[in-house]
Length: 126
Image (cartoon, rainbow, N blue to C red; front, side, top):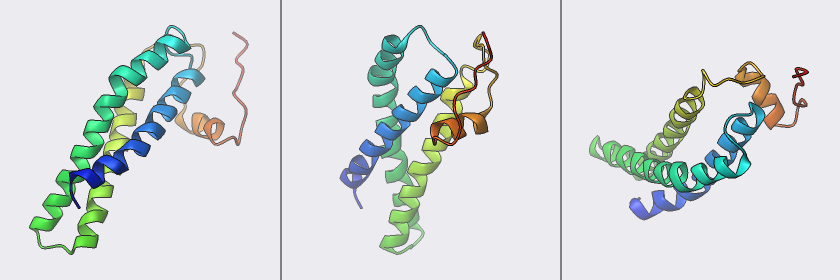
């Protein structure tokens, strides 16, 4: 598949990524306020991640085709490249604020339970 295919795949991936980062920042009370966080996510993080998702999928797909993989396998490798970039991008952006002064200690599993609606946000009485 070509660059256009990975551009189309990257749009919903970027939207989900931005939503996840916004929920993470909201949960840990990171940033000045919701408006400033949204501005930085929309104008700085989203375009950068859209380009990274597109490029990583396209490069992984082309590398798979060069080692004589079938077309379906190369598409799978391209999508795997997008997923790996998603995970690394989330780790980098969430780890960027690891020393940010916050009332809630960082616990990714606690955030994941909150994000999936399995547990309410913990109140630490601050």
